Image (tube, rainbow, N blue to C red; front, side):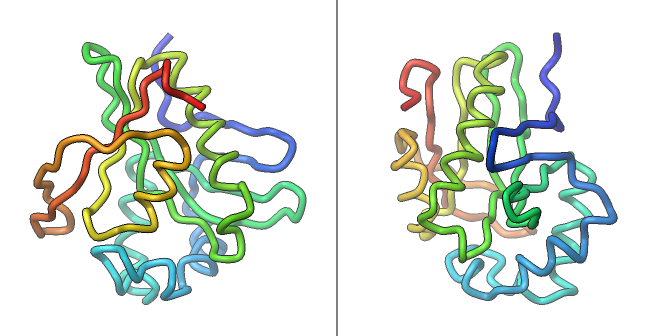
Length: 173
């Protein structure tokens, strides 16, 4: 069985479903909050024209829409990428969740669904986080991911310092 970067995953409260072109307006309603992007290298992503570029890429690489099942409301987006069968690893990233859901446990539920799925195929899950993105770094550490080496990555035409976080199958909380 091959790793599918666009699985349908759900529990009692959250649904992760493949992102489709018709989801643009629903997802942009979440993304248009400038606070979501204040620590992000694309800090203007709340602007519709900038978000359109992100969305085009998100559709092309198979991102997942995050839905609050209890309220039937779109609350964000995430994705799997760079699955490496030989290295038994996969990357999770490009996640954003509506500010109203910060600190509510929804990010942990989303990641738990993703971790349980990914660990069926991989031994390690990686996350690339821009060094200055303290909010994302703290969220990953709460989930048990450990900071590792600092690397340089190309991101939207810029070279940025990133920390590689790792969660091994045995380290999952």
